[in-house]
Image (tube, rainbow, N blue to C red; front, side):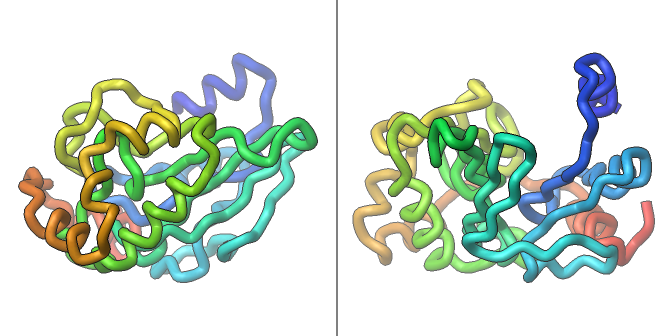
Length: 207
């Protein structure tokens, strides 16, 4: 409902619904929003869901008027995780990166939930994101006291440059094995009922 209200208040038509990954902490609203707007759902091609969606892969570019959305496959938190690099063409090729649960403000995504990827995958994905220009704005899925990360800032956005300096995982990124050890040592919070939430989001169990 908030998305519909924002769209209506600003005379905007919702035509694309991007889902960065299968969530474990809340029930996604992508299908309901698609039903109400007729918009298509976009996910990485490896997403194991039983409902129809438009398949995306590394390097795909979707034009939505002037803005262009480039897909970066960033597995780790989940195998299908992707980040979305949004730029206002032709002014710039890099502007905002929606990082899902891969790169958070202050840390990186957790890997201790069923169906997660590997620390090695997350290492490569975070390195890929931090290779972007320092001015690129970072919009993660979670911040503050979210159960999906450890030591997150309460500020909902960041920049690549800020995360290079202050992210809690930055020292560990100097070496692959050091990063693996860092991830394994994270003390994460329990997410009650996350198995059921994931099944609902995969459409294998109806809400």
